Image (tube, rainbow, N blue to C red):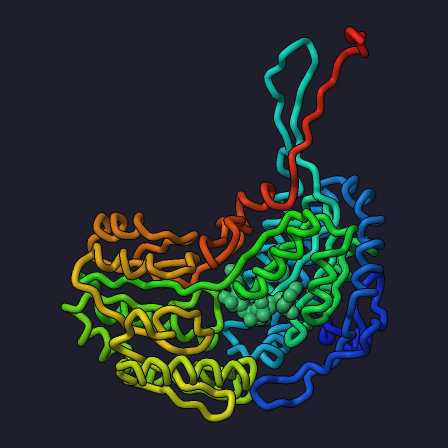
Length: 490
Ligand code: NAD
């Protein structure tokens, strides 16, 4: 069957609407979605508030019972169909991702490919064994089984909206939950409409997935709604702290996948050309707006000069511009406010003695690939997640000093170590306090098969993906069975 359609997205169906048991208008009017590269209007979707969340949560709770009873093979079939639809219509859908998020084409295609992989991984979750028999203390039978939480709330950010939304949505639903999802209001199409469309066409029953574009108020309503049992949040440490606080008050399980200040450690025996290429990819991909972006490059001082020259040459040859109309390496930054934040970090570093070797300027929202050397503790560029295309170089004298500098961060998401001596790289890497450690690679790596998450300000110790999904999106139930009821002393 050819499942490719020339107008799969079908904007007439959802313009000005949210997806909640069909496409419907929402309580707060509409959100105008604009292209961050040029301010052009992309589309409009429904804007949701508290009452939309309450309605959706009620409907999702009602739908959950029968969804959880749907046979695993049927759940898996719907999921694989949805993944097929995403892949088959990838060329059309990537255009929407590019316009809405400012992505270059390869990054938009990574979202399509990884989005489909996450959905296929979720299909396999539906058919996993879900329990175990327990040792008994008498003649009864005891077993423990994993059961869904009920309704899961998902809240996602703007930067990789399709993948970061679908990774939680798909795992939660495949395991028998229903979902109320709020994408970022700047990216409701990539983070919401596309997902609704593929699952709608794949035959997911009505009420199982609700997609409610909206702002922080809708997010807070998800955290406090009595019909929602768990919240899966991906976003900033500041947003995560608020979400954790509200969920705690309502005794909800909460998964927090937050920001990072990820170190790439380069040892003195590393190949300089390959390492410069790794650093450029890690620091500049999607304008550095990635939680796993290489945020701090720690290089052995013996090779700093050769490495820095190569990285600067790369930065100076990476064009920034509108990815929908030009062949560029860097697209726009998501907002003017974020451009100002990036500039403030660069200016602070220069004022405190760092050297600006490339970039450091912007043309509107197009921020040039930037290289700072001599970055030190006490500078924002050393300590803060920048979410912009800024490579921050600091040096170390010994491997122990590299470990100390890398571990001085409040975050603990990802790290990379590059060396031609595998044993040395692994010995150093093993001492880093991170959720993801990449030996002989930069820090931007993801996919459905690994448990992804961080320590410290990068999260609350939860993980999403791979073996972690069953742990996160279900809970234990102990079942004991006596052949027949027996009397007690009372
Ligand atoms: P953000 O925290 O501002 O927003 C993320 C989402 O939370 C949005 O949908 C937003 O509307 C919502 N939100 C904001 N305040 C809320 C509140 N009080 N209650 C409920 N919801 C609320 O994050 P951002 O700046 O848009 O995204 C970038 C951040 O996300 C970066 O810090 C980045 O590192 C992080 N991130 C983490 C991962 C990960 O997997 N660890 C992945 C991508 C991005």
